[in-house]
Amino acid sequence: MKIKCVTKKKADTVIIEQFWNAAINAKEAGFDGVELHGADGYLPDQFLGSTSNKHIRGGSVENRSRFILETTKSLASVWGADRVAVKSSPTGGYNDMGMPLEETLESFRYLIMELDAIKVAYLALARYIKMSLFRRKRQSPPREIFIPTTYYWSI
Image (cartoon, rainbow, N blue to C red; front, top):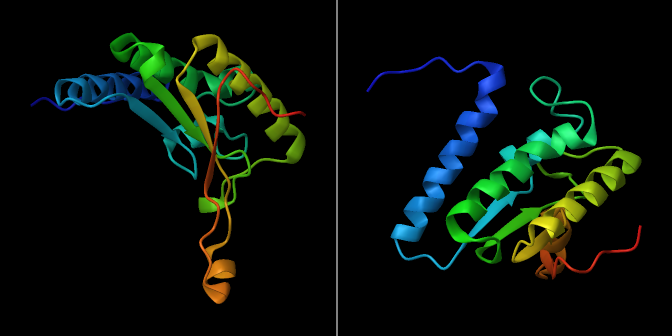
């Protein structure tokens, strides 16, 4: 196996291709669909965040959203959009992720509208809650809410 040097400009393209290959493998293995985990500081979340994405595709909301959108489209090319979902965490928090409120609202308004245009199966929004708060009370935290992509929260 020959090792290739990946430049910053090509890094996201190589990674999207790896997601595409994983989607093919999942389909061949008999999965029913795939969910792009873009929450809690995972790589798609890092591309979207204005505080973490300083080099490759930082700047505008469109540039920061491009990795998630292109990856979602590549997954949909394998599965069809109705078998692809995206998980994200607008409130950040985990792994020191998060953006100022105005940037969060702008970023997720744009991202959700674009994902709706792709017609993904669903969008899972995860809310970060400090687990230590629930350990004292011995409760299970509410972790995710599922929002059909044809509906939006009011901003």
